[in-house]
Length: 499
Image (cartoon, rainbow, N blue to C red; front, side):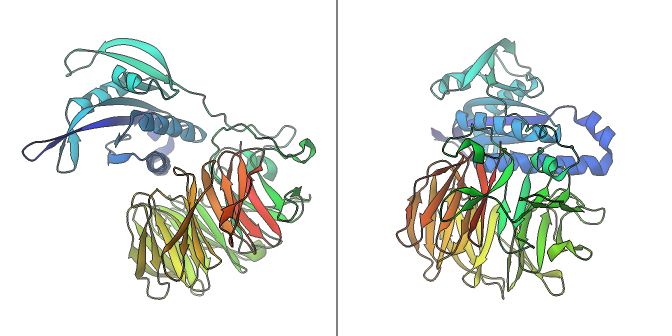
């Protein structure tokens, strides 16, 4: 519903307001730098949820966000995800949601609808989402539960407003493994927060990316004796599709800020302390390259840390700027995307310094290298850019129908997952033309190419094998928990499985 007036429009929209609870006290306890780092992590979590549920960020005044959505359910799901994802940071928000006609002028949104959403937020308790009766009625068929919070008068808004609190199954934080020391590497790998892993006897090119758990129930299909604990990395044999042991899993623990080398067959783990919370990892035969999007050191707001193979030698730091969120390695260099600066930075692996930085479209979410190019996917722009690694210029842009999540290159093609569309888009790396779209149910996330297959990790707790010849997806392989990252090392396919 859109009405046009002189210089303005009236748009039927859903408005979400969020605000950090107890920000003044938390800031005083942490100090300026600690609070700045926490707020940056809060902003990154909120923006990730907005991208996932197709919200439009309008303002970040103070410690909260003002965003709009096409549908109320999107706003509700976004708010619940934010609250759950902030729990590992011991951070709470309150949220308010209202749906109605809003005034749109010059890219700004205002009017009574905005004020009502803001007042609804003010009624929320810590960790609570308050919605108006309008939102409740429109969302009645979407399997969302509400608790009546009564009728209220909102300051500056005429009339009385009936409001409700959203009820949902709160995601549980993974407990420490029973009988294991909290300081041990196995316990660290199971703690809250994000973690990433690179696999091999030493650091090799296969990289595994894990993200925060989504609380889905484990699925059957693997014998009980073979099921490891959630919040772990599994090795799947590419031939038998069974879980096997062996090798070493290199794990980045965001919560503990430690790089672990954990032998899956037993033995002592090697560790290196990290200067901050990592956001991405890539590896080649010589080193691991770890990106930090937020103040990792007192000198830099965002860095890349180079750790030599075998964890030998002193780690080296390269400044890349605030907001680094993805990294890829090739013979042409190390490439880092920055979702806040909308940029791509090339690092010279020999001099270990920034060689060039170019602008991108809004909010790049993943980067990969292959077929002589750097490939960057953009969530809001729904596009993939092909970039020449030598000149750092864009040579091609391919429009995507749905927001992308991850990208991989192999078999002369580029493979892009979309969780919202439950699909993998395939692009020919020579012609830049779309080849096909493969249906992959289960909210596909991470993707990797191997010697004879493409592997997709799905949030519903499955792993899917795609045949690169026939471009068909095989039957899902059930895992003991949601899968978000996948990598191929030799004959093994490694998957992060989380609780």
